[in-house]
Length: 277
Image 1 (cartoon, rainbow, N blue to C red):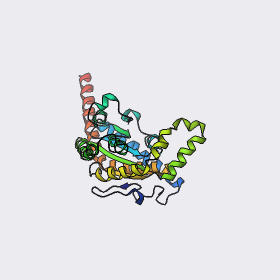
Image 2: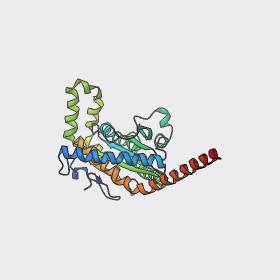
Image 3: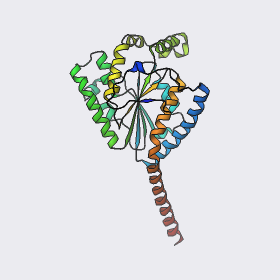
């Protein structure tokens, strides 16, 4: 069964209808075992995609503070070849970035063919943070949903496989994670008073996320709600979705690699023939 919840295009998402603590009936040991299998397959798929150069992957991670974006990146990409991966993180826009359209800083770092790209936060901040904190007028951020859909459609039409994951944690789980950081000196560097300030806007963020998920899940760039209270299940759910999505592309990648192999063998045969002559 799918461990993530794919948002059907045109549907209206209510996050309270999704259990952030769901584990699909698995225990932690079974989850780790399944994750290991799928992660090994993901490694193979990434290697073939990189070598074939016909597609790229853009994995977008969004979620409330402490939802586990960094942890998911470390776990899911642990066995991938770093040569074919790139992670981008988006913070408060610089003055130079603000002088351009809101998609400029994002488009310039989308993955080239063959690459596995990850956005730790993304262009969706421009319909989330700016909405919650009234940083731009309502009529400005409302237009951005369709602009985002057009942008992601452009990426997909040019070979990028777009997958967007919302890491769904409960308000209680977030509080526990924030408090835990205060108790452990080795993790206290992660603390920020801003995390607690943003937590005061929990309901507003949930509403903003619901609209973003509802308005911007498309056939070519779907949103997935990931139950993320359990870190091991979060990692398993993301990895399973990646593998299930990439598998159908494998025949075309293998065909490209076979064509490359024949060409290389022919080149080698010609070289040896010349030397022999």
